[in-house]
Length: 280
Length: 296
Image 1 (cartoon, each protein chain N blue to C red):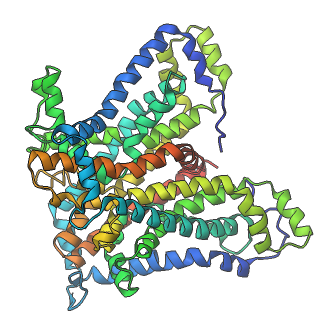
Image 2 (image 1 turned 60 degrees about the horizontal axis):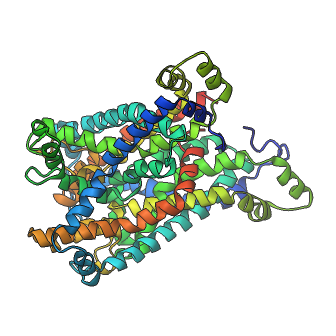
Image 3 (image 1 turned 30 degrees about the vertical axis):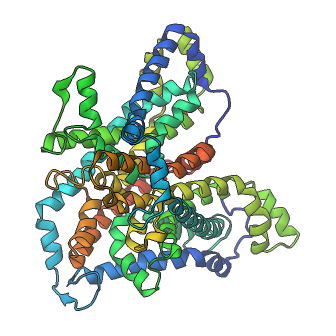
């Protein structure tokens, strides 16, 4: 795995003043293009009614949905999702890396093959299962299938990480008479903390992004998540200029939790995705 | 990387391993094994989301799905859109990552800006994008008028060509992941290689194109595979932007299944389509595992 080093080899290219200026200008122009949707949505949200639109959508329920509540809902689902993935993923990562058992490699690749399963392809069974388990309108009902879809990635990431841990840590513990559960809790978990943080941040982001499972499982407006609310609140606004502006204000607000997460956790997301990722 | 080499020889931890794998097996058993079995069963029925009064119809659903031109189109679109994303990643994504890596001013902010569309909920970004496509007052047409290029104005979702163009623009916005891969991997390139190239008088663009592009070929592979896999998982991106318009011509496998199951309540039919898509996705995943294994 490539470690991110501080000194970037490309920085010497900055010595060429003209090229550096060209790049700076090009990047600024492209950044403007990338910000164009954001600029548009903010501009539209203020066009009729100004900042009052934000106050309005924050203080009323839209089709029964109260926006601040959607942030809380998204967050609870995200935490549950992260907990399941970290718990099941770290145990499996340890097993595939440190334990010897017959068919280990075959089992490992069988686990990884499910990296490709699309959420849309399992909506029919998930709908049925959720009904059987009585999990409609519950955070758990959303977090469980989300965790199932994230786990192949988690196992890949954590096994790769565990393979890279110096074996002498475990040997020393083994000589001292530590069993596997002891080694898992007092050596593997503390040593994997950075990777677990990366993975946890990714889980939270993926949960914030998920629309399919919330829309399938949560029908109650009180439990609607932020990504799901994009659709739920839409019909609460009629196509008048004022209400269209309010709809845009609501869209801006719905992005806030994700943006906060990006500002805080971008470093960990990048490390998680690039160090485990689709690479070996 | 060696693993488990130090474990005592000849001893198997089978039972312990089973205990460690129980949580994983719970999720896999429920949401993969049971789920796929259930799909196989339902795919030969005519049934609604209440799952009562199922009528056995044999292989009819598969025949209907396979002969539906819209389904074939959605599979081809999924691959086409993956192709567009891959091209964008290898060109625009690569260049953006390289330019940011030279340490331009405000590079952390720029990095964040280019990643933003990929990291916020896609339902949100695609909805905003869909609004920008509106013919009369949409942001894109207004922008084209404002910069004196009224010829670029489109009835975006009015015909197939401009519908595809709209999706292509949208996909270019979403190249955050490849940018992450490139910016991370370029740091591992040997500094002296670039130094000697600059001393030999190679220009910046030459270094990008002739030196770094070939040097990062493993990253290209990672990018291509991850985009290809991601494309079959895509759903929100089309559902909230074009909604498959015009006339389902920009739909992808994700929106096709979703509409069949939840829009039209044809659950058996949706299950058959799901199984076909699953087989394609698992084949790609299998191919990826074979490819990356050889590299070891």
